[in-house]
Image (tube, rainbow, N blue to C red; front, side, top):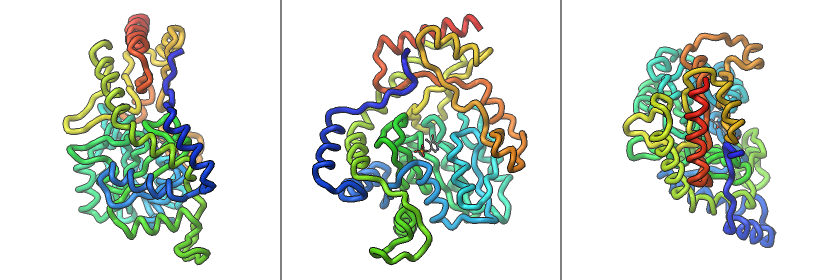
Length: 358
Ligand SMILES: *Cc1c(COP(=O)(O)O)cnc(C)c1O
């Protein structure tokens, strides 16, 4: 079976972990500080704050912006559950917009229409590795005095125009094993606001500013040096891996039936965390046909967040036709950088065969 993801861990990562183990400095030490410095440099921002996951990155970003009970955060429902759960963790309420059906990212006009006096932040997701429409979103946020929080968990080093994602608003990244780079588990928040960064550093470590002086209620969201040293080795490889992901995507674009390939808007650099096709016909049957041909295809995501049982309990109902429709047609194919040329040719053949049989 050709897997949907295959984390790449090389000799550099292994040697780096061994040297951290031997150093005795295991948690939030020099490697974490160096990882933050390098990640900030990658995104072109002044500060990066390392945390334990992409979920905790979103959580501390929202808290640092002052989100709490009574506030509303405008976000999308067609994404991983963490994008909206992080809003609930703060006591604020997620308000869902529909998506652009071509790119699956936030519908900016719909977002604008949902702003109320309670709105405090806009939280777009760079789904599958393609940036949301950050130009108009930043303008909208600035015009209304709202925080812009980017869920960039799937979009390391993706660009909108010339600028990196995570440099428009407060950027939240994940280093989960299937993401474009990994540290095992891990996350990072990027910002150009040193005061915001300082609040996030306190929130990740029990509200502590000076050793054992606790100014606010915080958490243990620390990253370990073992994880950071893996992340550091992966930063060095990210750019080459992204190039391979893009080459794999270009191959599929050229070899798959017309109309199924992902749409990339001009000026946006897609980093293909996922290569997600639109299946013309019975999508669930396509998954089976591909599995029979040795290709693991996955559905990201089979339900919108407002359709999840827990959100139904909170009173959310169906009302977002493009997002709800997307759950029925999307299918993600293996596009990761360890795919061989034979494997990617096999995937393309299998998809062509499967679609003929639908
Ligand atoms: C992976 C992911 C997250 C959460 O990151 P974790 O590191 O798994 O906590 C949040 N949002 C999106 C869009 C993701 O894909």
